[in-house]
Image 1: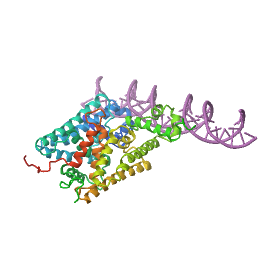
Image 2: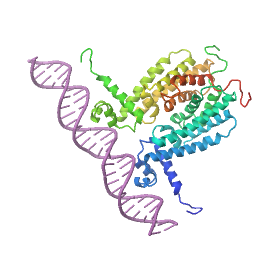
Image 3: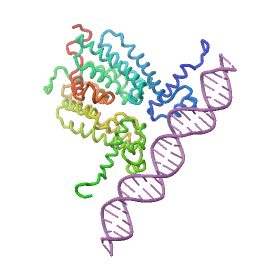
Length: 207
Length: 207
DNA sequence: GCTGTGTTACCGACCGGTCGGTAGCCTGAC
DNA sequence: GTCAGGCTACCGACCGGTCGGTAACACAGC
Protein backbone atom coordinates (compact mmCIF):
# COMPACT_ATOMS: atom_id res chain seq x y z
CA UNK A 1 0.00 0.00 0.00
CA UNK A 2 2.27 2.73 -1.31
CA UNK A 3 1.65 6.41 -1.69
CA UNK A 4 0.17 6.35 -5.17
CA UNK A 5 -1.44 3.18 -6.47
CA UNK A 6 -2.81 2.02 -3.23
CA UNK A 7 -5.16 -0.92 -3.01
CA UNK A 8 -8.86 -0.32 -2.85
CA UNK A 9 -8.81 -2.29 0.37
CA UNK A 10 -9.30 -1.18 3.90
CA UNK A 11 -12.09 1.23 4.24
CA UNK A 12 -12.54 1.80 0.53
CA UNK A 13 -13.63 -1.72 -0.34
CA UNK A 14 -15.88 -1.73 2.67
CA UNK A 15 -17.46 1.55 1.69
CA UNK A 16 -17.99 0.28 -1.84
CA UNK A 17 -19.90 -2.65 -0.38
CA UNK A 18 -21.98 -0.29 1.74
CA UNK A 19 -22.84 1.79 -1.29
CA UNK A 20 -23.77 -1.19 -3.43
CA UNK A 21 -25.88 -2.66 -0.64
CA UNK A 22 -27.49 0.73 -0.07
CA UNK A 23 -28.47 0.96 -3.74
CA UNK A 24 -30.21 -2.41 -3.63
CA UNK A 25 -31.87 -1.90 -0.25
CA UNK A 26 -33.08 1.52 -1.36
CA UNK A 27 -34.72 -0.06 -4.41
CA UNK A 28 -36.22 -3.21 -2.87
CA UNK A 29 -36.39 -2.48 0.86
CA UNK A 30 -34.36 -4.11 3.62
CA UNK A 31 -36.41 -7.28 4.08
CA UNK A 32 -36.93 -7.52 0.33
CA UNK A 33 -33.22 -7.66 -0.42
CA UNK A 34 -31.36 -10.93 0.11
CA UNK A 35 -27.71 -11.26 1.05
CA UNK A 36 -27.25 -13.31 -2.09
CA UNK A 37 -28.36 -10.36 -4.23
CA UNK A 38 -26.09 -7.98 -2.35
CA UNK A 39 -23.13 -10.34 -2.69
CA UNK A 40 -23.69 -10.79 -6.42
CA UNK A 41 -23.96 -7.04 -6.95
CA UNK A 42 -20.60 -6.72 -5.18
CA UNK A 43 -19.18 -9.43 -7.47
CA UNK A 44 -18.76 -11.71 -4.50
CA UNK A 45 -20.21 -14.94 -3.25
CA UNK A 46 -22.31 -14.80 -0.15
CA UNK A 47 -19.50 -16.22 1.97
CA UNK A 48 -17.12 -13.69 0.47
CA UNK A 49 -19.43 -10.90 1.48
CA UNK A 50 -19.65 -12.25 5.01
CA UNK A 51 -15.90 -11.87 5.25
CA UNK A 52 -16.45 -8.09 5.34
CA UNK A 53 -19.58 -7.79 7.43
CA UNK A 54 -20.93 -9.43 10.55
CA UNK A 55 -24.56 -9.96 9.63
CA UNK A 56 -27.46 -8.38 7.79
CA UNK A 57 -28.67 -6.08 10.52
CA UNK A 58 -25.18 -4.79 11.23
CA UNK A 59 -24.88 -4.05 7.51
CA UNK A 60 -28.03 -1.94 7.66
CA UNK A 61 -26.71 -0.20 10.75
CA UNK A 62 -23.43 0.60 8.98
CA UNK A 63 -25.35 2.00 5.99
CA UNK A 64 -27.46 4.19 8.23
CA UNK A 65 -24.47 5.41 10.23
CA UNK A 66 -22.72 6.31 7.00
CA UNK A 67 -25.90 8.04 5.86
CA UNK A 68 -26.02 10.09 9.05
CA UNK A 69 -22.37 11.06 8.57
CA UNK A 70 -23.16 12.15 5.04
CA UNK A 71 -26.21 14.06 6.14
CA UNK A 72 -24.47 15.84 8.98
CA UNK A 73 -21.59 16.73 6.68
CA UNK A 74 -23.72 18.09 3.87
CA UNK A 75 -26.47 19.76 5.86
CA UNK A 76 -25.81 20.33 9.54
CA UNK A 77 -22.12 21.25 9.30
CA UNK A 78 -22.76 23.62 6.39
CA UNK A 79 -25.50 25.64 8.07
CA UNK A 80 -24.62 25.40 11.75
CA UNK A 81 -22.55 28.57 11.79
CA UNK A 82 -24.93 30.81 9.89
CA UNK A 83 -25.62 33.64 12.29
CA UNK A 84 -29.10 34.69 11.27
CA UNK A 85 -31.48 31.97 12.52
CA UNK A 86 -34.01 32.52 9.73
CA UNK A 87 -31.34 32.28 7.08
CA UNK A 88 -30.00 29.20 8.88
CA UNK A 89 -33.38 27.52 8.57
CA UNK A 90 -33.74 28.54 4.93
CA UNK A 91 -30.33 27.17 4.05
CA UNK A 92 -31.12 24.04 6.02
CA UNK A 93 -34.30 23.47 4.02
CA UNK A 94 -32.50 24.06 0.74
CA UNK A 95 -29.67 21.63 1.49
CA UNK A 96 -32.00 19.05 2.92
CA UNK A 97 -34.17 19.00 -0.19
CA UNK A 98 -31.07 18.81 -2.36
CA UNK A 99 -29.85 15.79 -0.44
CA UNK A 100 -33.17 13.99 -0.84
CA UNK A 101 -33.63 14.80 -4.53
CA UNK A 102 -30.12 14.50 -5.94
CA UNK A 103 -30.15 10.72 -5.83
CA UNK A 104 -26.53 10.63 -4.72
CA UNK A 105 -27.19 9.37 -1.25
CA UNK A 106 -29.31 6.22 -1.17
CA UNK A 107 -28.20 5.85 2.44
CA UNK A 108 -30.23 8.87 3.53
CA UNK A 109 -33.35 7.55 1.79
CA UNK A 110 -32.89 4.27 3.64
CA UNK A 111 -32.71 6.12 6.95
CA UNK A 112 -35.97 7.83 6.07
CA UNK A 113 -37.82 4.77 4.85
CA UNK A 114 -36.63 2.08 7.24
CA UNK A 115 -37.41 4.13 10.32
CA UNK A 116 -38.57 1.12 12.34
CA UNK A 117 -36.44 -1.69 10.96
CA UNK A 118 -33.43 -1.62 13.27
CA UNK A 119 -33.78 -2.98 16.81
CA UNK A 120 -32.06 -2.65 20.15
CA UNK A 121 -29.00 -0.48 20.64
CA UNK A 122 -28.46 0.18 16.95
CA UNK A 123 -31.97 1.58 16.70
CA UNK A 124 -31.43 3.76 19.75
CA UNK A 125 -28.15 5.12 18.39
CA UNK A 126 -29.62 6.17 15.05
CA UNK A 127 -32.76 7.55 16.68
CA UNK A 128 -30.61 9.68 18.95
CA UNK A 129 -28.68 11.16 16.04
CA UNK A 130 -32.00 11.94 14.34
CA UNK A 131 -33.28 13.55 17.51
CA UNK A 132 -30.24 15.83 17.60
CA UNK A 133 -31.26 17.19 14.23
CA UNK A 134 -34.82 17.80 15.37
CA UNK A 135 -33.45 19.65 18.40
CA UNK A 136 -31.23 21.75 16.16
CA UNK A 137 -34.26 22.89 14.17
CA UNK A 138 -36.30 23.51 17.30
CA UNK A 139 -33.52 25.61 18.79
CA UNK A 140 -32.94 27.63 15.65
CA UNK A 141 -36.66 28.32 15.48
CA UNK A 142 -36.71 29.36 19.15
CA UNK A 143 -33.83 31.71 18.43
CA UNK A 144 -35.82 33.33 15.62
CA UNK A 145 -38.79 33.70 17.95
CA UNK A 146 -36.62 35.36 20.57
CA UNK A 147 -35.49 37.89 17.96
CA UNK A 148 -39.14 38.57 17.14
CA UNK A 149 -38.71 37.23 13.64
CA UNK A 150 -41.14 34.33 13.97
CA UNK A 151 -44.41 33.70 15.74
CA UNK A 152 -44.11 31.72 18.99
CA UNK A 153 -45.59 28.40 17.87
CA UNK A 154 -44.96 24.96 19.40
CA UNK A 155 -41.28 24.34 18.49
CA UNK A 156 -41.57 20.57 18.08
CA UNK A 157 -44.57 20.86 15.80
CA UNK A 158 -42.81 23.48 13.71
CA UNK A 159 -39.73 21.26 13.48
CA UNK A 160 -41.66 18.15 12.45
CA UNK A 161 -43.74 20.16 9.97
CA UNK A 162 -40.56 21.49 8.44
CA UNK A 163 -39.15 17.99 8.26
CA UNK A 164 -42.37 16.46 6.98
CA UNK A 165 -42.59 18.87 4.06
CA UNK A 166 -38.97 18.39 3.17
CA UNK A 167 -38.48 14.67 3.76
CA UNK A 168 -41.80 13.49 2.34
CA UNK A 169 -40.33 14.51 -1.00
CA UNK A 170 -38.55 11.16 -1.19
CA UNK A 171 -41.92 9.47 -1.65
CA UNK A 172 -43.06 11.39 -4.70
CA UNK A 173 -40.07 13.06 -6.34
CA UNK A 174 -39.20 11.90 -9.85
CA UNK A 175 -35.83 13.06 -11.27
CA UNK A 176 -37.28 13.46 -14.76
CA UNK A 177 -40.59 14.93 -13.64
CA UNK A 178 -42.10 18.34 -14.20
CA UNK A 179 -40.92 19.63 -10.83
CA UNK A 180 -37.17 19.98 -10.65
CA UNK A 181 -35.24 20.01 -7.42
CA UNK A 182 -34.77 23.78 -7.79
CA UNK A 183 -38.48 24.44 -8.25
CA UNK A 184 -39.31 22.42 -5.16
CA UNK A 185 -36.74 24.30 -3.12
CA UNK A 186 -37.99 27.70 -4.26
CA UNK A 187 -41.63 26.72 -3.81
CA UNK A 188 -41.23 25.29 -0.33
CA UNK A 189 -39.08 28.18 0.87
CA UNK A 190 -41.70 30.61 -0.40
CA UNK A 191 -44.52 28.65 1.22
CA UNK A 192 -42.90 27.96 4.58
CA UNK A 193 -41.26 31.34 5.13
CA UNK A 194 -43.54 33.54 3.04
CA UNK A 195 -46.84 32.17 4.29
CA UNK A 196 -49.81 30.79 2.44
CA UNK A 197 -52.77 32.94 3.30
CA UNK A 198 -52.99 36.45 1.87
CA UNK A 199 -52.08 38.83 4.73
CA UNK A 200 -54.96 41.26 4.24
CA UNK A 201 -57.77 38.75 3.74
CA UNK A 202 -59.42 37.86 7.03
CA UNK A 203 -61.41 34.63 7.26
CA UNK A 204 -64.54 34.71 5.16
CA UNK A 205 -63.87 38.25 4.02
CA UNK A 206 -64.70 39.01 0.41
CA UNK A 207 -62.16 40.53 -1.93
CA UNK B 1 -78.19 -19.16 10.22
CA UNK B 2 -81.26 -17.70 11.92
CA UNK B 3 -82.30 -14.11 12.24
CA UNK B 4 -80.21 -13.31 15.29
CA UNK B 5 -77.03 -15.33 15.78
CA UNK B 6 -75.87 -15.26 12.22
CA UNK B 7 -72.54 -16.68 11.24
CA UNK B 8 -69.60 -14.32 10.95
CA UNK B 9 -69.06 -15.58 7.44
CA UNK B 10 -69.45 -13.77 4.16
CA UNK B 11 -67.53 -10.57 3.97
CA UNK B 12 -67.18 -10.26 7.72
CA UNK B 13 -64.72 -13.10 8.10
CA UNK B 14 -62.75 -11.79 5.15
CA UNK B 15 -62.61 -8.30 6.58
CA UNK B 16 -61.47 -9.69 9.94
CA UNK B 17 -58.59 -11.39 8.13
CA UNK B 18 -57.72 -8.13 6.40
CA UNK B 19 -57.65 -6.28 9.69
CA UNK B 20 -55.54 -8.90 11.44
CA UNK B 21 -53.11 -9.01 8.53
CA UNK B 22 -53.01 -5.21 8.45
CA UNK B 23 -52.08 -5.09 12.12
CA UNK B 24 -49.15 -7.44 11.62
CA UNK B 25 -47.93 -5.87 8.37
CA UNK B 26 -48.15 -2.43 9.95
CA UNK B 27 -45.93 -3.61 12.80
CA UNK B 28 -43.35 -5.68 10.90
CA UNK B 29 -43.59 -4.46 7.31
CA UNK B 30 -44.90 -6.39 4.30
CA UNK B 31 -41.78 -8.37 3.48
CA UNK B 32 -41.09 -8.86 7.17
CA UNK B 33 -44.40 -10.61 7.80
CA UNK B 34 -44.81 -14.26 6.77
CA UNK B 35 -48.03 -15.87 5.70
CA UNK B 36 -47.55 -18.35 8.55
CA UNK B 37 -47.63 -15.50 11.07
CA UNK B 38 -50.72 -13.99 9.49
CA UNK B 39 -52.46 -17.36 9.44
CA UNK B 40 -51.64 -18.04 13.09
CA UNK B 41 -52.88 -14.61 14.12
CA UNK B 42 -56.16 -15.44 12.35
CA UNK B 43 -56.29 -18.76 14.20
CA UNK B 44 -55.90 -20.59 10.91
CA UNK B 45 -53.36 -22.81 9.28
CA UNK B 46 -51.57 -21.42 6.26
CA UNK B 47 -53.68 -23.59 3.96
CA UNK B 48 -56.81 -22.37 5.70
CA UNK B 49 -55.77 -18.78 5.14
CA UNK B 50 -55.19 -19.45 1.45
CA UNK B 51 -58.80 -20.57 1.20
CA UNK B 52 -59.80 -16.93 1.66
CA UNK B 53 -57.11 -15.13 -0.32
CA UNK B 54 -55.31 -15.67 -3.59
CA UNK B 55 -51.73 -14.82 -2.68
CA UNK B 56 -49.66 -12.48 -0.56
CA UNK B 57 -49.55 -9.53 -2.93
CA UNK B 58 -53.30 -9.67 -3.54
CA UNK B 59 -53.74 -9.61 0.23
CA UNK B 60 -51.70 -6.40 0.44
CA UNK B 61 -53.71 -4.95 -2.42
CA UNK B 62 -56.98 -5.78 -0.64
CA UNK B 63 -55.69 -4.14 2.55
CA UNK B 64 -54.69 -1.01 0.66
CA UNK B 65 -57.98 -0.82 -1.23
CA UNK B 66 -59.85 -1.13 2.05
CA UNK B 67 -57.58 1.58 3.47
CA UNK B 68 -58.39 3.89 0.58
CA UNK B 69 -62.11 3.27 1.10
CA UNK B 70 -61.69 4.10 4.75
CA UNK B 71 -59.69 7.21 3.97
CA UNK B 72 -62.08 8.49 1.36
CA UNK B 73 -65.01 7.87 3.67
CA UNK B 74 -63.51 9.59 6.69
CA UNK B 75 -61.71 12.47 4.98
CA UNK B 76 -62.65 13.18 1.39
CA UNK B 77 -66.38 12.50 1.67
CA UNK B 78 -66.67 14.55 4.85
CA UNK B 79 -65.00 17.70 3.50
CA UNK B 80 -65.82 17.59 -0.20
CA UNK B 81 -68.99 19.65 0.15
CA UNK B 82 -67.66 22.41 2.36
CA UNK B 83 -68.23 25.55 0.35
CA UNK B 84 -65.42 27.77 1.57
CA UNK B 85 -62.17 26.42 0.06
CA UNK B 86 -59.98 27.56 2.96
CA UNK B 87 -62.28 25.94 5.46
CA UNK B 88 -62.32 22.84 3.26
CA UNK B 89 -58.54 22.61 3.45
CA UNK B 90 -58.52 23.22 7.19
CA UNK B 91 -61.08 20.50 7.80
CA UNK B 92 -59.15 18.23 5.46
CA UNK B 93 -55.96 18.73 7.46
CA UNK B 94 -57.77 18.12 10.74
CA UNK B 95 -59.42 14.89 9.62
CA UNK B 96 -56.29 13.65 7.93
CA UNK B 97 -54.19 14.07 11.08
CA UNK B 98 -56.90 12.38 13.11
CA UNK B 99 -56.87 9.40 10.79
CA UNK B 100 -53.10 9.03 11.05
CA UNK B 101 -52.89 9.48 14.81
CA UNK B 102 -55.95 7.63 16.09
CA UNK B 103 -54.41 4.22 15.51
CA UNK B 104 -57.72 2.83 14.31
CA UNK B 105 -56.69 2.37 10.73
CA UNK B 106 -53.50 0.38 10.27
CA UNK B 107 -54.49 0.07 6.63
CA UNK B 108 -53.87 3.76 5.98
CA UNK B 109 -50.44 3.58 7.62
CA UNK B 110 -49.59 0.64 5.36
CA UNK B 111 -50.61 2.69 2.30
CA UNK B 112 -48.27 5.44 3.47
CA UNK B 113 -45.32 3.24 4.34
CA UNK B 114 -45.42 0.62 1.58
CA UNK B 115 -45.61 3.18 -1.18
CA UNK B 116 -43.40 1.18 -3.54
CA UNK B 117 -44.20 -2.41 -2.60
CA UNK B 118 -47.07 -3.23 -4.96
CA UNK B 119 -46.31 -3.87 -8.62
CA UNK B 120 -48.11 -3.86 -11.93
CA UNK B 121 -51.79 -3.02 -12.23
CA UNK B 122 -52.44 -3.13 -8.49
CA UNK B 123 -49.78 -0.47 -7.97
CA UNK B 124 -51.23 1.68 -10.72
CA UNK B 125 -54.73 1.42 -9.28
CA UNK B 126 -53.69 2.54 -5.80
CA UNK B 127 -51.42 5.25 -7.16
CA UNK B 128 -54.29 6.64 -9.18
CA UNK B 129 -56.56 6.84 -6.16
CA UNK B 130 -53.78 8.64 -4.30
CA UNK B 131 -53.33 11.03 -7.20
CA UNK B 132 -57.03 11.90 -7.08
CA UNK B 133 -56.55 13.10 -3.52
CA UNK B 134 -53.55 15.23 -4.49
CA UNK B 135 -55.62 16.75 -7.29
CA UNK B 136 -58.44 17.48 -4.86
CA UNK B 137 -56.05 19.47 -2.67
CA UNK B 138 -54.51 21.25 -5.66
CA UNK B 139 -57.94 22.23 -6.93
CA UNK B 140 -59.17 23.44 -3.57
CA UNK B 141 -56.05 25.53 -3.22
CA UNK B 142 -56.50 26.95 -6.72
CA UNK B 143 -60.06 27.85 -5.78
CA UNK B 144 -58.82 29.77 -2.75
CA UNK B 145 -56.30 31.59 -4.93
CA UNK B 146 -59.03 32.57 -7.37
CA UNK B 147 -60.97 34.07 -4.48
CA UNK B 148 -57.90 36.03 -3.50
CA UNK B 149 -57.66 34.19 -0.21
CA UNK B 150 -54.29 32.59 -0.84
CA UNK B 151 -51.08 33.54 -2.58
CA UNK B 152 -50.65 32.04 -6.09
CA UNK B 153 -47.95 29.46 -5.36
CA UNK B 154 -47.20 26.29 -7.32
CA UNK B 155 -50.31 24.15 -6.59
CA UNK B 156 -48.53 20.78 -6.67
CA UNK B 157 -45.83 21.94 -4.28
CA UNK B 158 -48.43 23.35 -1.92
CA UNK B 159 -50.36 20.09 -2.07
CA UNK B 160 -47.33 17.89 -1.39
CA UNK B 161 -46.15 20.22 1.38
CA UNK B 162 -49.56 19.98 2.98
CA UNK B 163 -49.46 16.21 2.69
CA UNK B 164 -45.86 15.95 3.84
CA UNK B 165 -46.55 17.85 7.06
CA UNK B 166 -49.64 15.85 7.78
CA UNK B 167 -48.63 12.35 6.71
CA UNK B 168 -45.07 12.42 8.04
CA UNK B 169 -46.74 12.34 11.45
CA UNK B 170 -47.03 8.55 11.18
CA UNK B 171 -43.25 8.31 11.50
CA UNK B 172 -42.89 10.13 14.81
CA UNK B 173 -46.25 10.23 16.57
CA UNK B 174 -46.50 8.40 19.89
CA UNK B 175 -50.00 7.93 21.33
CA UNK B 176 -48.75 8.42 24.89
CA UNK B 177 -46.33 11.21 24.08
CA UNK B 178 -46.30 14.85 25.08
CA UNK B 179 -47.97 15.98 21.86
CA UNK B 180 -51.57 14.82 21.65
CA UNK B 181 -53.42 14.50 18.39
CA UNK B 182 -55.34 17.68 19.24
CA UNK B 183 -52.19 19.71 19.87
CA UNK B 184 -50.71 18.59 16.57
CA UNK B 185 -53.88 19.53 14.72
CA UNK B 186 -54.04 22.98 16.32
CA UNK B 187 -50.33 23.59 15.84
CA UNK B 188 -50.22 22.59 12.20
CA UNK B 189 -53.38 24.52 11.32
CA UNK B 190 -51.91 27.59 12.95
CA UNK B 191 -48.58 27.14 11.17
CA UNK B 192 -49.88 26.30 7.71
CA UNK B 193 -52.75 28.78 7.55
CA UNK B 194 -51.48 31.42 9.97
CA UNK B 195 -47.95 31.67 8.64
CA UNK B 196 -44.61 31.35 10.37
CA UNK B 197 -42.80 34.61 9.88
CA UNK B 198 -43.96 37.68 11.74
CA UNK B 199 -45.75 39.88 9.19
CA UNK B 200 -44.07 43.14 10.14
CA UNK B 201 -40.49 41.89 10.43
CA UNK B 202 -38.67 42.21 7.12
CA UNK B 203 -35.61 40.05 6.46
CA UNK B 204 -32.65 41.07 8.57
CA UNK B 205 -34.59 43.86 10.22
CA UNK B 206 -33.90 44.41 13.90
CA UNK B 207 -36.64 44.55 16.48
C1' DG C 1 -87.66 -37.47 8.29
C1' DC C 2 -84.35 -39.37 5.94
C1' DT C 3 -81.02 -39.35 2.29
C1' DG C 4 -78.11 -37.88 -1.66
C1' DT C 5 -75.68 -33.90 -3.49
C1' DG C 6 -73.16 -29.69 -3.36
C1' DT C 7 -70.68 -26.18 -1.04
C1' DT C 8 -67.96 -23.79 2.39
C1' DA C 9 -64.31 -23.66 5.48
C1' DC C 10 -60.63 -25.70 6.89
C1' DC C 11 -56.65 -29.12 7.95
C1' DG C 12 -52.10 -31.99 7.80
C1' DA C 13 -48.60 -32.85 4.87
C1' DC C 14 -45.80 -31.50 1.66
C1' DC C 15 -43.63 -28.95 -2.56
C1' DG C 16 -39.38 -26.61 -4.65
C1' DG C 17 -36.83 -22.96 -3.53
C1' DT C 18 -34.57 -19.39 -0.75
C1' DC C 19 -33.32 -17.46 3.55
C1' DG C 20 -29.25 -15.82 6.70
C1' DG C 21 -25.24 -17.75 8.03
C1' DT C 22 -20.95 -20.94 8.51
C1' DA C 23 -16.98 -24.44 8.13
C1' DG C 24 -13.06 -25.25 5.84
C1' DC C 25 -9.93 -24.81 2.03
C1' DC C 26 -7.13 -22.19 -1.46
C1' DT C 27 -4.20 -18.45 -3.14
C1' DG C 28 -1.52 -14.54 -3.82
C1' DA C 29 0.85 -10.56 -1.68
C1' DC C 30 3.60 -8.97 1.88
C1' DG D 1 4.97 -18.33 6.45
C1' DT D 2 1.37 -15.67 7.67
C1' DC D 3 -2.88 -13.81 6.78
C1' DA D 4 -6.42 -11.05 4.40
C1' DG D 5 -9.65 -12.04 0.95
C1' DG D 6 -11.94 -14.95 -1.33
C1' DC D 7 -13.96 -19.53 -2.75
C1' DT D 8 -16.97 -24.15 -2.72
C1' DA D 9 -20.02 -26.55 -0.31
C1' DC D 10 -23.20 -26.85 2.88
C1' DC D 11 -26.46 -26.09 7.09
C1' DG D 12 -31.24 -25.88 9.34
C1' DA D 13 -35.03 -23.03 9.12
C1' DC D 14 -38.26 -20.91 6.79
C1' DC D 15 -40.44 -18.98 2.56
C1' DG D 16 -44.96 -18.63 -0.41
C1' DG D 17 -47.95 -21.77 -2.10
C1' DT D 18 -50.53 -26.30 -3.16
C1' DC D 19 -52.13 -31.05 -2.56
C1' DG D 20 -55.87 -34.41 -1.33
C1' DG D 21 -58.99 -34.97 2.05
C1' DT D 22 -62.87 -33.95 5.47
C1' DA D 23 -66.25 -32.08 9.03
C1' DA D 24 -70.23 -29.40 8.99
C1' DC D 25 -74.05 -27.73 7.06
C1' DA D 26 -77.78 -26.37 3.44
C1' DC D 27 -81.24 -28.01 0.62
C1' DA D 28 -83.98 -30.67 -2.58
C1' DG D 29 -86.50 -35.10 -3.57
C1' DC D 30 -89.13 -38.54 -2.05
